[in-house]
Amino acid sequence: MPNTAVEYLHVVAAVIRGNDGRILLAQRPTHQHQGGKWEFPGGKVESGETPLQGLSRELHEELGINVQQAHPLIKVRYVYPERAVLLDVWEVIAFSGVAHGREGQLVAWYTAEQLPTLEFPPANYPIITAARLPERCLITPEPHNTAEFLHQLEQRLHAGIRLVVFRAKSLAADDYVALAREVIALAHEFEAKVVLNSPPIPIAEADGLHLTSSQLWHTPRRAGQWLSASCHDGRELQRAAEIGVDFALLSPVLPTLSHPGAAHLGWAAFAAAVEDVNFPVYALGGMENSHVATARLNGGQGIAAIRSVWDGV
Ligand SMILES: Nc1nc2c([nH]c(=O)n2[C@H]2C[C@H](O)[C@@H](COP(=O)(O)OP(=O)(O)OP(=O)(O)O)O2)c(=O)[nH]1
Ligand SMILES: [Mg+2]
Image (cartoon, rainbow, N blue to C red; front, side):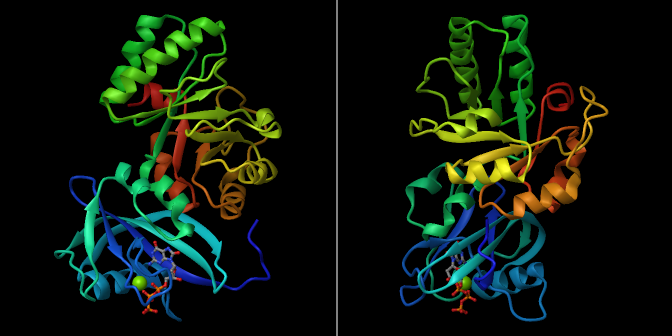
C-alpha cells in the first residue's frame, strides 16, 4: 500500500523498444542520484505537463528522439533515504530520430532477458519484470488429449503467445509433471515462459510457480524462479505484495461465460487495486484480445485468459 503521508516525486521513464525488440538504456551520470547505474531514460514531470508530455520532452532532451507511440506500462513507488519517487513507466513503441546520449551519457540497446544482469537503481526491479512480460498471458484449458493439447499449444506459440500458466487440475501428479516438462520444452523453443500452477513436485526448468489465491496464505517456496499468483480483490493483491510476488492475475474483471451472473470487479476497481501495488498485474475474467489496450490504460500489464487466448489467436 503506498504511504500516503509521503510526497512522491513524479518521474516518467521509458521502456523504448527498437524494431528488433531490444530496449534502449542510458547510464545515469555519476553526479546524479543513483549515479553510474543503468536507467530507463526519463526524468521529473514539470508542473503543467501531462506525463506523456513530460516523457516526450525528457526523451527529446536526453536522447534526441520524438515519441510517436507510447502506452502506460507500470507505476512503481519507491522510498529512497533521500527521496520518494513515483516511477511512471511508459512503453515507447514508435519514435523518430536516432537515439544518442545528448547529455554525454552512455546509451546502449539490450534484450529484455539481459536486463536482470545489469545494475539498476533498486526501484527498478518491477520495471524489469514488466519489460520481460508480454501483454497477453495464456492460462491453459484442461488437457484432455495430450497430443492434441501440445499441438494446439504450439499453434498459440506460433501466433505469438509468450507467457503460459500451465494448469491441469484433472491430471494425476506423475502425468502433470510429464506433461509440464513437454510444455516447458516446447515453450522454450519459442522463448516463451511457463509458470506452473501448483506442481506436485518442483520442476527446475520452469520459469515460475503460480499460486492460487488460497495458497497465498502459506509461505511459498522460492526456487530462483518467478512467483506469480491469482488474486480476486485488493486484499489478496496486498497479500501477494507482502510475499513478494513478481506478477499477479486479478479476476474477475468482467462477467465471464462460465459464471455469467457472478459479481465482478469492473475496470475502476481493477485500476484502484493495481495502483496500490508495485508489480505487473494482468486483468482476467471476460477478457478478449481487444481488451489489451483497456487493461493497459487501467494500469495493467495486459490480459490473461483461457478461452479467448486459446481459441482466438
Ligand atoms: N529516469 C529514471 N529515473 C529513475 C529510474 N529509477 C529510479 O530510481 N529513478 C529515480 C532516480 C531519480 O531520483 C529520479 C529521476 O530523476 P532525475 O534526476 O533523473 O530527473 P531529471 O532527468 O529530470 O534530471 P535533472 O534534470 O533533475 O538532473 O528517479 C529510472 O529507471 N529512470
Ligand atoms: Mg533523467
